[in-house]
Image 1 (cartoon, rainbow, N blue to C red):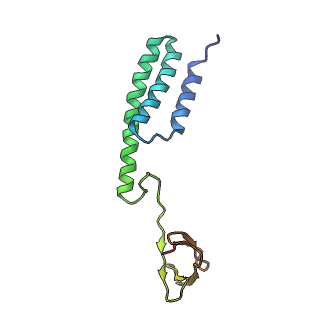
Image 2: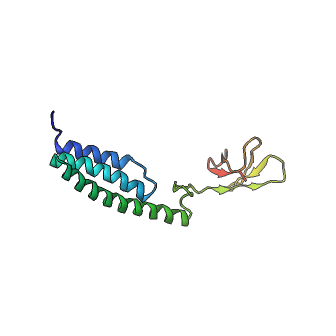
Image 3: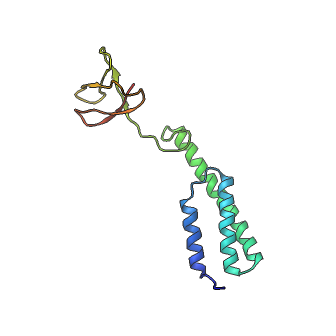
Length: 136
């Protein structure tokens, strides 16, 4: 059986960790443990190396998962993210007009925009200012 160089195994493990979107510190710890076991086992070529790597990976994964969770919570509290932690783009909300199916754009020159057939809360492009607003 041919052995893989440690750099290849480590690089693969780091790429796998960087592309994963762990939601909780527990999930991050689990992924860290798996990655650490792979790297530790490949480096030492025995079970003890895998166990040590798993322990180190689990601790590092839990810490990184907690940091990411705290950052998502802070972004949500500041209004920069939704409840799932995804960024929220801030758009102005149009004002309803006295004409059914039309709103007044929140951007100058405050054009009347036809929003018939567009659901409330949807993003709409102002054809005059070419900026996006939210349909009330």
